[in-house]
Length: 187
Image 1 (cartoon, rainbow, N blue to C red):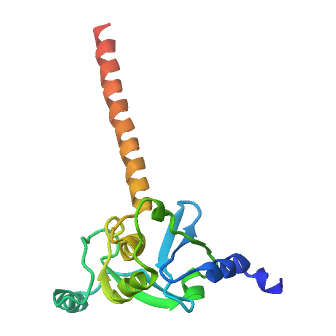
Image 2 (cartoon, helix red, strand yellow):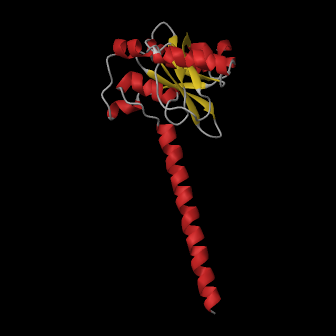
Image 3 (cartoon, helix red, strand yellow):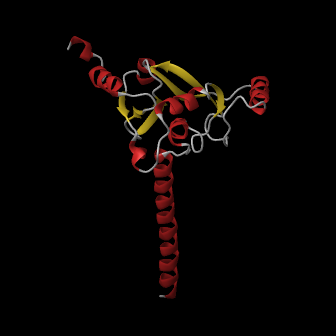
């Protein structure tokens, strides 16, 4: 039990032991906004995952685009948040840190996953520089594409739904305010 002093160590050890090749893990990164980082289990405690990198200087950017045109990277839309990312193969403990990990194949009930070795092959084929976009090409999109061939992010869908509802409420509130002003002017 002495090893369990490190935050989430015992929990994460059990998660790691339960994983099979091609499983997805989500890692709770921010309690306030409920943000999760996603990775694919490749075996032997290794995980391919997307890590955004800061915007590059023009020279580096040109080199990146030249590499991209020659088919060595995974392309989606860009321009939101960091422009570039790297798909890395890293050790479980480096990816997870002190955060809480969870085996997360919840989309299996809606989509048919590839076989484990095919999921890993897809993930490993993307190692290296990639474009990044928090709305269209983030770590969850990558993990979902590897497992299901669908670039989906429940986190983004949820955030956009909330933003739409709030926006709708603001519009309705503004319209009601204008209607009440008209009735008050008539008095």
